[in-house]
Image (cartoon, rainbow, N blue to C red; front, side):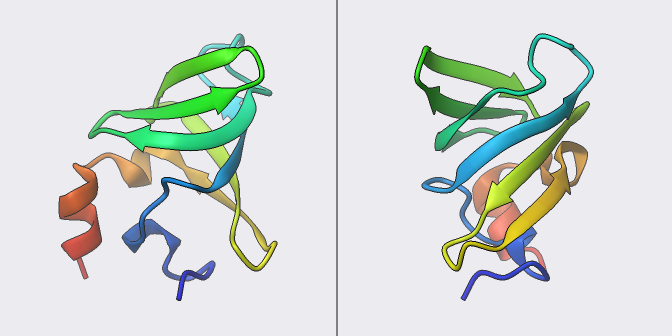
Length: 88
């Protein structure tokens, strides 16, 4: 089960997200639903459309399935998702 302690080793697709900090000030405050993820990008479905944001330099506030909020530095997520899931 996904929790605050192991969220980095879980699938992020399907979670609601808010960009709480970003190197690019235009990215701060973007919120929506994570629909895809690559090694360096998070793809978010927003009300304004699809946004592709870099992980590096971003802070993501995720809402877990049990409605817990967790904030993650995007640089901790830089790895291909399938490799990150296998990492201990």
